[in-house]
Amino acid sequence: MSNVRIVTDSACDLPAEVADEMGIEIVPLSIRFGDEELIDREQLSVAEFWNRCVNMSTLPETAAPAPGQFETVFRRLAADGATGIVVVSLSGALSATIQSAELAAKSVAADDAVDVDIRIVDSRTVTMGIGTIAIACAKAAASGASLDDVAALAEDLAGRTRVFAALDTLDNLKKGGRIGGAKAFLATALSIKPIIDVTGGVVSEAGKQRTRTKALAHLVERFKGYEGRVENLAVLHADCSDVDVFVEMLRPHYDGEILIGEIGPVIGTHGGRGTIGVAFHETA
Image 1 (spheres, rainbow, N blue to C red):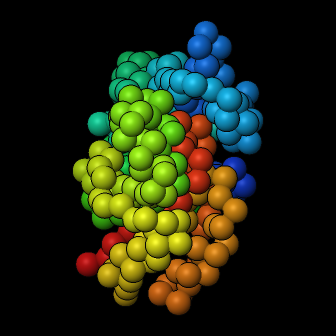
Image 2: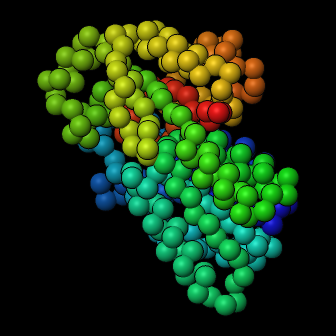
């Protein structure tokens, strides 16, 4: 195991087995249903989250990890022999998660008994966009890259990460107050599927398609525009039965491994069930 370790948060939507294999530590956010607060993936599975959402008239809320959660992980990794830690965080424009990591790093740095150098990188992205950066950094660390090199890689990839997706429902946008009820009703009646894009750490609308089939085809067409300039491709989905179909649509345009990650409560709260998309790094 490298003496440089990678830490991220549960908004990364990395499959647990992949994170375990790569030695990536995941600090969980929390999900609040009214007065009830549950820890993402520990007290609330993805399946349980979607089941709860079906009958809710209002959206749950997400909460950043407390600094102490990061500090516990930092201290444990240092005790295990880590001399450097790179944190790849959920976009700072969308969450206070990165601030918690920074506070924890300051606390550890003030402790002379703990000798570990912590670098915190804003991924400026979401879901598997974060996950693909964390994986690339973990691979670099495992190959012997220095802390400076791994941190520089994380910064570089944050600028080259592309994430775009199609929403299947406007229910969550309506419940979250981002779209009016009448407009949501009309869009749903017309089967409109918004296309979203993550740029500079924020989520923006990038068009709309009239059906699910057209939305998937649109995502593939857009992806084709990057053909030959793609590495570390991942598909992200929120409980989608057609994810395998979408992966097969992408395969003719990418000859590498396609990692599949399931969107969990943190991002799913906002995107809604049925969201599907891609995350990758654009090469020069």
